[in-house]
Length: 330
Ligand SMILES: Cc1cc2nc3c(=O)[nH]c(=O)nc-3n(C[C@H](O)[C@H](O)[C@H](O)COP(=O)(O)OP(=O)(O)OC[C@H]3O[C@@H](n4cnc5c(N)ncnc54)[C@H](O)[C@@H]3O)c2cc1C
Image 1 (spheres, rainbow, N blue to C red):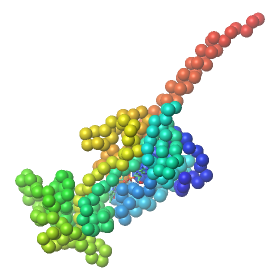
Image 2 (cartoon, helix red, strand yellow):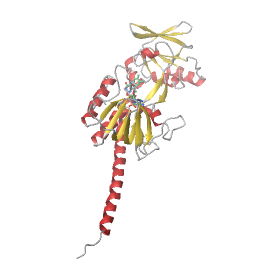
Image 3 (cartoon, protein in one colour):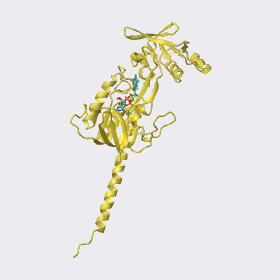
Image 4 (cartoon, helix red, strand yellow):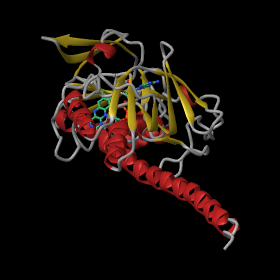
């Protein structure tokens, strides 16, 4: 246990365990802790946007380093008694007595009545020299996050994904100097016509490497030796949800293999919730935070309902006992 953290905490049983301490998980924890629930956030400390120097499009946090936002979030949840645990969850299992057992790498276990999965997703990047090193700095995927920073400048879009042509057409909103490199995925006639109509240039070929000058991207090189100068490269990664901790619990998934939830974040299995990028690849940080808050509301209501049901059973049993109690002899 650390941190914003409670170094002396010895509790192992919580109302709610949140797995993942990004925007989604921390906001869920904040609302739940303020609802006077006992909460632990177990976090492996690798939020998806960590490679970026600045986070954008989050009201009141625009331009703030992503890790600073989370540091503030951890301090806020600690103020209400939520515990932050540095660690990775391997597996969540159903407990025999109801609720769930959360197994951490290294062997520790925690118990919870409900579990919120907020573990984000994994971006698989093309294996091209320079891409990983410049990811989040000069190589981006989300125009709403970093399009403004390269507005009006030359941008190259790599055709590495079926969604790439749409990405190029969208980016034209931010700059009139967009070049699309099909990169082995030939454009259909319709896609090519849309590129022409929208003023997106197509440079046939395959990118071999990204070139930097003074530590910043300044061009891409194609396999035939041509170079295209640019201030930014956009590409669409293959996104995979980090939902392995819920494997084996039988939660419903959609055809693409992503967990299905209702609008509040309930999975098909009672007591298991999922918010943020682990269920919605399009969720920006502010959206993930909102999903966390919405799930926390609904989750607390479910706990209150459970508690009322339990109290009713006890109340009726006690009323029953008093009506059956023998009348004292006079
Ligand atoms: C390069 C880049 C830049 C971006 N820039 C912006 C931006 O400017 N503005 C914006 O709004 N959005 C931006 N995004 C999107 C943003 O990253 C996501 O919207 C946001 O991170 C989603 O929050 P989340 O809480 O769902 O997941 P995350 O923030 O990814 O948090 C998930 C957390 O769960 C942890 N975790 C994963 N598995 C486990 C496990 N088994 N056990 C314990 N912990 C685990 C991870 O280590 C991580 O700390 C960017 C994305 C990228 C890739």
